Length: 337
Image (cartoon, rainbow, N blue to C red; front, side, top):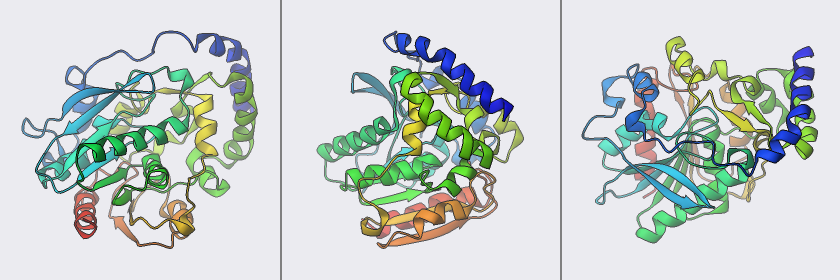
């Protein structure tokens, strides 16, 4: 409780500063991943077939959207039968999804992995980011890919990216299917308890944050202090790398983003959603166990399938789960072309 009070006190004192700084220059320096090392260090912990090689190196680019520059990793293949947009969660970035991008690309699919606003190398005004920006950006990317050609587009989300994939598909039903490792509906208090890692934090801090965001929405909070980020991966060495990486788990997000994420409501509730859904849930997820996704998944009445990634943590890099992930995803994509 003492820690919660301290956080709220800091937010109140930062409120005026935060509002004054929202018009400052962007907080993210335009730096390409080819010049960064953390993702390479993380990749060294992966099996070789899941690492980027010279033949699978994505093309880095920026797309203008909403006055911001969004960084994209594009694994291009004009002959691919389908395209997959990969979405990270609140502890990642587009490049860290290479462990699923590479096997999908090697299997003949085109893959696009954006750095969502506030993460990775995207150039945005971080203090202004809200969760709807994420949903609207993904919808824009879907439109952009469909405008290029009529190949089917699938959306894949890791962690909070799973629910984002659902939200984007509910807003823009041009997608052929939704794949997610988690489907976390933060409107449900039980799910929120697991996400924060503390019932006290969830039931006491979150309502306080909602109130504080009304006058200090631009206050920046370390994501690792708000969520149970220590459980993002089961490998201790990878965990250290992630938590120290300011472009992923070590980033700060504005209070308004957190509160908008918690109360996010999809355009279509699961009972009437008809796009096929594949939930590929990690079997050893120490952050958000399978039941936290089943709360939402069980409400889906359309075509759906649940597969468990054996021995895999929330960031599913362990065998055999890491191999099962592309296998299950590819079977799902082929079934819905």
